[in-house]
Image 1: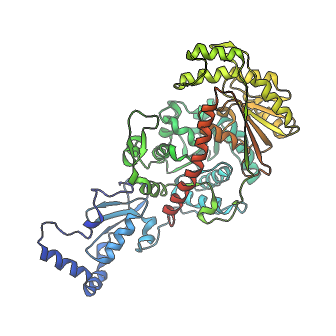
Image 2: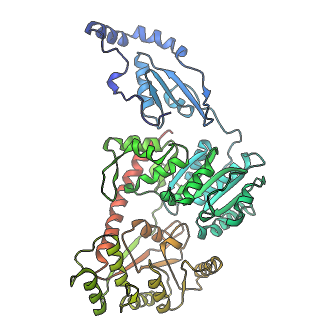
Image 3: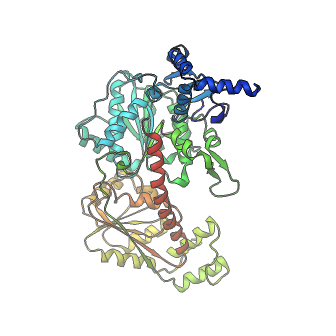
Length: 557
């Protein structure tokens, strides 16, 4: 079935259908006949003969309604209503759409697919409860939620219900970033008591998949390796699935293969930025809404060629795009936009402080060698920008150069008093230098063993350690670090997503104090930081617009 568009393409003017070869008088008579109330009434009495019985599709993906549209005003109204649905097919006079939208067209009630009724937990927010119900009814669903709205509660509620309705031999698998697994298990205990969620090590994943234990298991994405077989898997849930941008990476393909044929699939991640709408496509493929990412792109996007963001949404496709998405996902950054009442109070403010840090004479000399100029006026491509960024941190071609930045950041940390803070880095040598300079800190890098990471994070959350030093790619997704009221970005280099995710570790539901974000910059780093901050302002405005469109097109779905 084609989603969200008719086949072949027609304009509203072609409905009701009148053969273009007829002469003018016949067209006039047909138009008068359609307007004739007696004929309309008579046709309406026979409409039941035009509806086919509801039948299950051979793919087993659900139920669909098929109706024949006749040359009546009433059917023309149905045609317009069908065109407003998130998913439909129009071939000639035959219209097809999922039965869940039958009530919207005015031809019947929805057929309930799930025999076991969902019993929501009493502690859920209203939007968590309602979206859990939708995700369970849809079975394959994605929740694009802003950080801090409680995706974990939605995920656990879905998994608990699915485990209850699956056959006794089927398991539910949660895929999660490594650093979030223990936090998710702790949340499950908090919400459901001793409800069992089994941590599955990468080496044990295939054995667990083959065991018919009717368990909920959780493992990290790195455990996905080629050759995994589905075994007794009955449902799969991906937490922080924005990592599916690497759709053609090895684990991404394994995730798609592992999910093929499953009736129950759930994705949870933050809200994609308006300039990153292709992220929706990766999820659409996993959730069986499109066969390939290219099929998704061809439907809604145009390739602009040699640009960094060459896939652009077709100008006329904005509303159809979001209308189609609303069939299998929800975009949520402010529950009040949809009419929900819970958790709608604004978060404490984020205060941005930009500081100037002078370059040393050694750094100026390194810039001259790199660019051939006394001043870095041309920052060039990614490689050149990365080299200049590393010079700003005190490294040039693997050699240390004197820098004022670590000492400046250390003085900033001391000025915070007893406040807990997080320092975000990008490079290993940068992080090592800061860890050696800043007192009373816990540094977590790629070589830190998992047990040590968890111990240091726990000590930081308890207030036993004042400062945490790490990288957004290590700690920037999913963790709750509301205790931190100060952040310092030693590096802020082009990536808005890393910046946003890092900030949202602290500025999220449960935060009670403003978050002060400090960005110390040398003149080498200003263009890169300004690029990120410009994106932040643009994306905030566009996100509000995106949610308004999404909420409007999804009403009644």
